[in-house]
Length: 131
Image 1 (cartoon, rainbow, N blue to C red):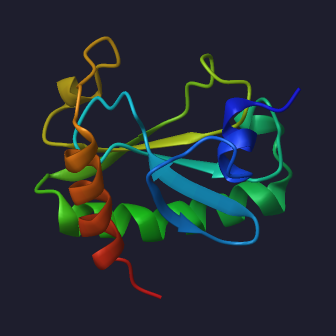
Image 2: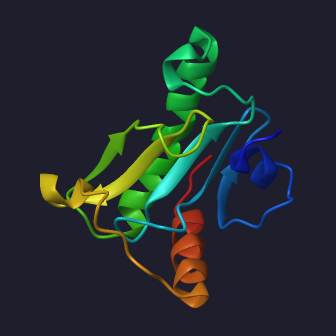
């Protein structure tokens, strides 16, 4: 059975898409720890991040860098924190989180945002993407 992330890529489940290439997909986390919290995934379904092929993990990080630059322009923050946890969904993914302090990476503290807020945040990040 396809992971929830594979179903998002296939369009079976809606998402707040930020960017997409042939190999990767980035979208807002619907249970964010900060406004702008974005997930970056490979379209190829691999459970564990460090099981990704070298070329795929390298490409994913280059793709994530472009997204992180756009997030930092769109969301006032000191940095974009990154983390790989991978316990909640069996599909490799990278979290990109706007932070001002290390405590901002607290996954026990999730935000609830309205559809309008998600749309505004995604539009702002997309507007800051560079080719």
